[in-house]
Length: 129
Image 1 (spheres, rainbow, N blue to C red):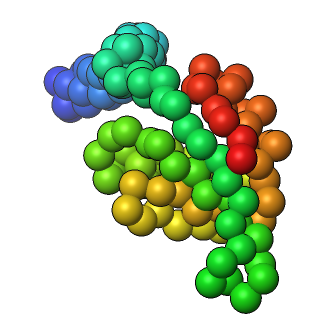
Image 2: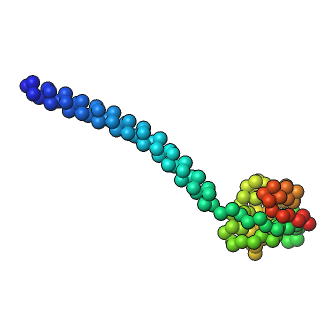
Image 3: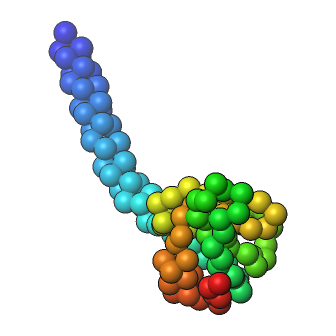
């Protein structure tokens, strides 16, 4: 009888310390994981290619749009995927719609001034027509 209670108390102690040890190791590993995640994020940011500074031309276009204005951005050099990402960023900043086709970005509305200011701040050469 005495042996059974001693064994059960030892098992209980093992389970309790096991749980505490697991919790401590988890807490220690979580701080290590946070450091590792931050390290990976900084490496990813360094690996992201920087956009090449472009010579862009901003034009106001009304033709074929039933009199509605649209800002046309031409002169972008890069592949179609980069063009779409760049256009999505511009549309998001301006809060309007638009599209891309044939190496041109179409932004709805007359936003030449706003786009010119933003693009020159990013380091692009901009000509407003």
